[in-house]
Image (cartoon, rainbow, N blue to C red; front, side, top):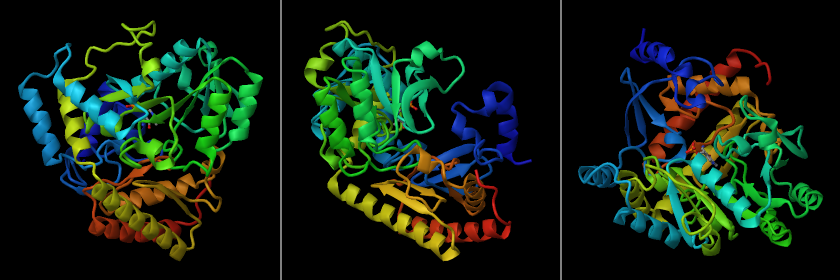
Length: 433
Ligand code: PMP
């Protein structure tokens, strides 16, 4: 038995499915997860010493790759001065200023420890500031595991959300209205039907949690206009897209200014940190200045602030140009390999986020994303893994390119993808779905 499998067996005795977050368990692709011993640059080394090109990069957190020397140095130096204070410190101010400089929509912010907390707190603030109960979200967008946000739509029609998880009472999602992604008309309809009751439109401005789905031309500006017309706030969940699709996130890339923004992943430089922020007059509603309560023992953690700041300091224009080029090469290579193999595929990409959907339909929302051939994806995933390439272990997740990836890893990945497709085809038609 491999060391990874032995660890997995022990892990399954002490943690549900042996993991601390569901997708890590490989349930969507079958088989058992690789246990990681080390990350270095764009490489993972598993517990058996296999080197894998990592296209997950901690689900997008590691824009500089694993263990970047500047980040390691900053975090280590901070740790020597104490791991947590539970009191304010300079590192928080420096990182908050760096965020505001990159994202002018974030005039003030609060640091929290996870993306879940960031979005949950932004939603509470929106409800508190508007004294309205409802939230509009989109089918296929994930905003963390807070109760009210674990809701999806019924069969692609704008509708009231039903809980996506046991343990969430329907009352909790009764104020969560769900529209199809990229469908501004459905949002307009929901806002009209619930006039005066919608606190906020909450959106992943680049969807990444149904695989990567770019916002259609005009979709984000339409949400901005609709929110303003109906007295609702616009919240961009940039936990994934922030500092990734541009230094200033989707706000910068698409030129739309939301009222509130949730950040996570890159902002903590691979340490547990996240944030929510936005207009000053809204943020002044947060306790102790205002009536909206939110707090956290480890919020603004000094080690995480140092890692985040060291990361943000390296995010300059040449870095994004490099990401764009390497990511384009990867997307083009994967597309070409699928075309050569005669496999219908769509590669959606925004900056250094991309997904391969095995379908002949353009993927613009959850319904079209769901048309991807998951069986084929699972086969290709394992074909890649056997060849030393670690892709996201689910058909509806994003691949993340880091500044540590180069043409060499892209070309090796495309070659492995070509072989994996060939092997998958040799196994006969996949059972779709
Ligand atoms: N929002 C988005 C857009 C995300 O992608 C995620 C996590 N993938 C979250 C929120 C939740 O963040 P966390 O896992 O840090 O709680």
